[in-house]
Image (cartoon, helix red, strand yellow):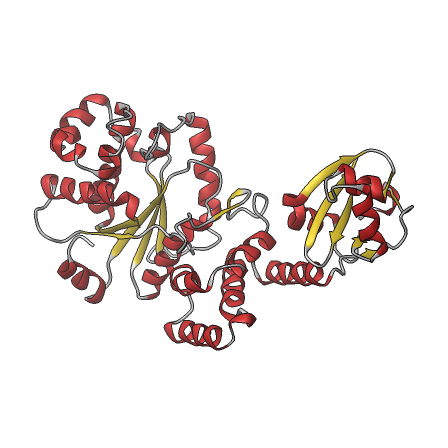
Length: 402
């Protein structure tokens, strides 16, 4: 927070306009962006007006990463991604009332600035030593940074200045990795428009797990808000498996539950941790918010089916969504169960495979297999596409039929 007194004035004494930006580096946001989306909704709840900025221009430049240069997007890619993000954000934030929220694209004003204007009107207000001291820049000095990424800070500052002058926007917020850019915007407004203490910068820490690993990453990579990239089931499972030490933080930052509701869930979790009441509520809130109640119910149905082993009623699409990370083989002809278990590495030998089958430890598509001459065929696959192998109670493997 750049100034506590200004924060109290702007947030507690009447209504104010704030903004948060999202760069279109891809065609979907991730669960990490939920922190800012929820903050937008909470500020709206208390009467403040939201400006959601999609960075069609800044996305062309690329915010400096800690280690290396970003791959530059083409104009077509950036604008296409920007349109995708606009549609996605529109699912969670209501833009029908301009007094509540508006969406803007910084390409609309930054693209109109020529080089002379950029250097004279804006660049003149940025001291090189000031810029070098920012963490996003200083962390790259040894490995090197292009002028393109070096200038990103100026472009984001121009955004804040433009929104301040056009919409009387007084607050910018974002993740803590944006703090240098946010404070640079405050400084530009002070130099070019007003030296009054009437603008504010806010940031929130990037979510990390208590074990030090990054929040929002699964074994398969980022968890996307786009259901075609990450299924609602995968989102639910990710949050269902949240550790007890992380769940309270996630409930506070990623959901719209009240303080009392969260405290009640944490109390239940501490009394009966094995029931995972807080984790289940977290998964429900997030999946329902992102994809609706029907998709949440589907995620529960798939979860229950896989837990019980009764997968007969799952479709091939649901099988693929839930077990794609354990796809271990693609076959184009019939194969004996023993050969399949050995060839795919489910067992280390034919002897082990026979023992597992003979002791009822292997199931195929929800049915226990008890004889070693069983044949895996496309005709018996789920929708003629997938065979699901279950070893014991918990280990699943997926076979795809060509």
